[in-house]
Image 1 (cartoon, each protein chain N blue to C red):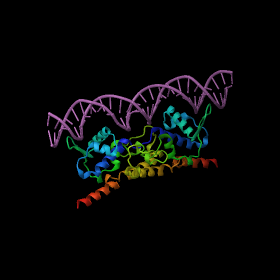
Image 2: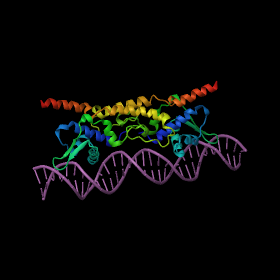
Image 3: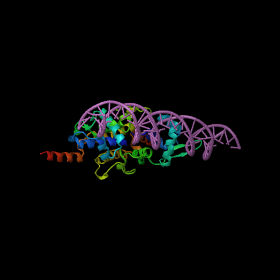
Image 4: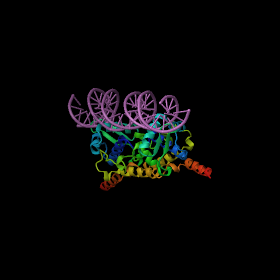
Length: 149
Length: 149
DNA sequence: CAAATCTCTATAGATGAAGTAGACAAATAA
DNA sequence: TTATTTGTCTACTTCATCTATAGAGATTTG
């Protein structure tokens, strides 16, 4: 299970992706639109700022915006930033690898081999899906492009 | 991430599967062999007993044994018994379905569609892998069959 | 300066994970 | 019957994490 925090982060980023060319977006606008507790969202956006996914401006007319292209922010990385490893056990994680305390011999652990398949299947999906791949986003972007002609 | 409890449950069941035809196995034997805290394992085995995966006998010469055939106990079900849903979000779980609090329209939620793919991929692996599928177990069973001739 | 925004620090309640302790009940064997 | 072995049950602890909330502070604009 991913945390609510990670889900909120995804929703917020998706919202920012939709508004990508409208400049800065208010925290409170995102919170209202996506029904995320405002103060909680603040904390999430700070995390995402530290990770250099978003940037912000203070003061009047301030707000948040994406730093990177929505086509370069993968869902997998967003979840990792908030929740940590996607793998079901630490011992099959690439980025958060840690040996199991109780494991006698990792190289022959059958559970590990099975969990590695789960990890790979999960990462195959989440690491190849980017914010820009969500159809609403792309549909909206196509619309906007059309409007710009 | 699955819990340690679920991992311990799997290891204990796998151990019981290996000893399947040797009758009752002591909690303390499993605990020592798999390096699981003994008292914690007790609690886990009670859970598995409630779920009718194992059965036990008290008193001298007592112990635990599997109730079902190792070829009929899937890893997915074991994890579900201990940890609950395999799905990354409740709203794509079959057995533990629950609507997301903040979701405006589930039918068009893009995150949901993506997570459904993750759930399906995970379940495809874990619900089709049974205790008997672990090679050590099967190898040992083959050996034992040979010895019985 | 006043208003609008983000920022930082602190706190808090609920929940669950992981584990421990100890008395209790049942089966068996001497 | 009694001692021993083994699982059972209840309760508790400790610690961490999740999900927030409150409020003062810093910054920018008009």
